[in-house]
Length: 477
Ligand code: ATP
Image (cartoon, rainbow, N blue to C red; front, side, top):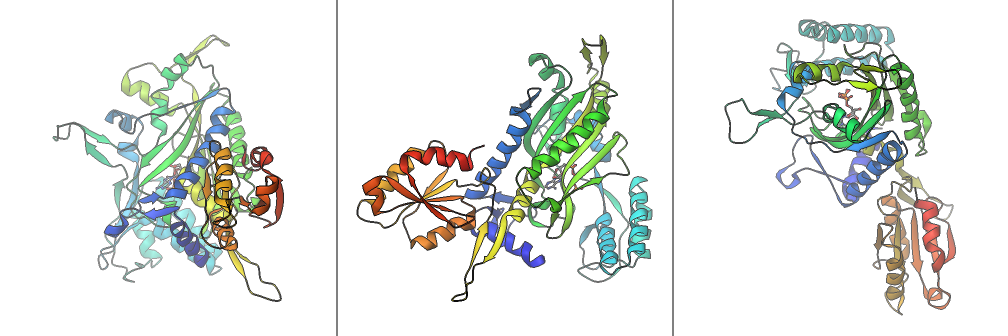
């Protein structure tokens, strides 16, 4: 599985999906750039989310709020005081770790060695210590379980300290601290503070939702697993405002709806599971993660949280502005309760790549053969169709260009005339292009082309004037 994950990362780089940031300067830790195909795939995932959440729900609208927000917002939300990870250093290697992750790795090791009893006891101890914010207890656990530094192999640890994950910077010319602003660590707060703006201008009636896609920044203590844990990433979040008392019903609905969204892409359903939070954040009355089985194990891709009226009440208190909604149906003013669905776009991207990547063995009795193929759902594929003239002469390129012209307004296409046709097919398989369209000599006579399907590698003949509707049937939403 380590091998598989390495191959996915290498594939993503080789074909222009994801590059390490600032690579010629040896990279910047936990920051990545999306290449020419990665940007397309990412856009398609965003569109899939936006259509499912905003376009298909008459009572959900989308916004795009700024990354910078008034510093008081992060006081109100609890991030200034509470958005911390417990950090510990090894004095020999001078390496920094997250104390809870060191312990989680140990739990995984116990499990691997079949010591399930030890593993579950340690999990409980970890949960208790985290819940009580007891840093001394975390240190004790690390000592009691002989946890060593993965680099130096020693147990020479510092005390555990809280480390705030927010990035801050100065706004304007003032550098005296009074103008300190944060890069938002989540997009949700931009929705909460605009709740009444949207409700009033959009004449929204509860229940309704506000959705947003945007960048978020977290100064993660350690970065690992490629685009799984980044310092700059993107979130797709939706806050759904409901009448108090109805929130658990809506929570259940969104929990089901969101898993369906993942499964509609036709992945292996066994790779998805819910992870209900037993211990809840102080403001939540229900929370669940949708987890995906990455090559390195089940990990959170999306969270669905019933956040009560915590955020809106906090903002009412800190801003001094009423955050109430008048509900004409029951003739009452109240602060709505909120169900949040929050998914990391980059994690969804990684999930998509892991689901799609395959080294397919095509060997026959006569010869050995294999291909790399990305079995992306056609709506997510970065390139919808590739257009190939069979050869570079006899007017075939011109004819292929005509076909391209016909379709390029509606679909992202690629034109290629270099290399043998088989090689061109394989290259498109590797980037997930569902359809290849080949123009040959017969095309000049009868205006038909050869269609070659990525998944089955089967070919069929189609009239050029049928291409648009044919393609729509395959890659259309
Ligand atoms: P984790 O426990 O993995 O750090 P979290 O519980 O802090 O995640 P949330 O605050 O619930 O995550 O954020 C919602 C979503 O944002 C997550 O489900 C995840 O997909 C994504 N996300 C959070 N932190 C990161 C990160 N550093 N890099 C990429 N995506 C992230």
